[in-house]
Length: 271
Ligand code: SAM
Image 1 (cartoon, rainbow, N blue to C red):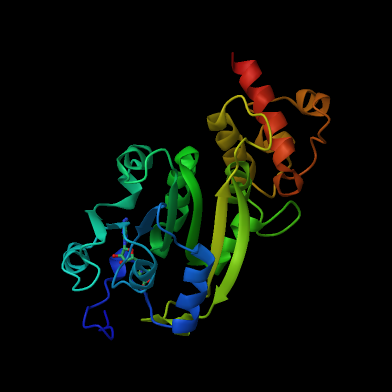
Image 2: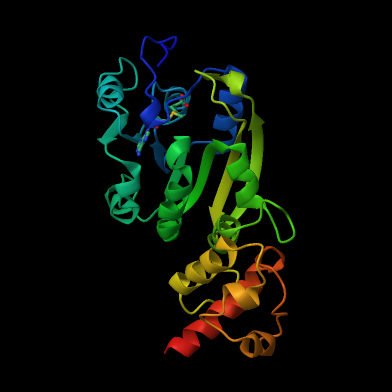
């Protein structure tokens, strides 16, 4: 545990690394470009590194903070307290669909942003993908490795389940790399900011998203195996070949379109 510049002791279990680099903060806020008449939601506001400059631009911001002490501090913020709606909750359990209906600007989707706690970033991304229909866009600081995985295409060593599912739901745009020194305490890893824009309509037709997720998990859990082997409980070698996909290929070379084709064949077989 280490003391930050603002007298709060950073809690490791909440993934607390607080941004203090004004250049990086300025770049992130410029990328978000917050405006009034938008339903802005910040995950993990912490000591307000992004909250405060966003509040300079808008009259209302909803924040979701798990740490009770930080939530209390935000509620009593001398300048921004009246602009903030502070939800003291685990973002992993947040029903973003229900939240979007309670937001001040009616019939507008959420604009979600945050410097996310790295210990939960991948499950949190999947939780947010489940709510992509009520989200206009997302700007997140993540481990650089996670941003690389979100943006990776077939053939890249970073390509995996997270890449396929992220790109099924969203357009993924890396924004900025951020070194450890921009945070207090500095994390052990490099960071990066990414913008995710949910597709209006999915880029591929998928019968069942659950099946797509399951097929990706099976294929990438054994990424060194051929799909003939990793998917053998779902499809035979012949069935894979009939889809126009080489059964001896590995998951890492298959496109989103290939995964959708495989998932739809599995769905058809199961019904
Ligand atoms: N936004 C601040 C900044 O940029 O300096 C803090 C970022 S810090 C990396 C992550 C923040 O998320 C902390 O404030 C932490 O308490 C909060 N947090 C951790 N787990 C959370 C969860 N499950 N739901 C909501 N907030 C969480």
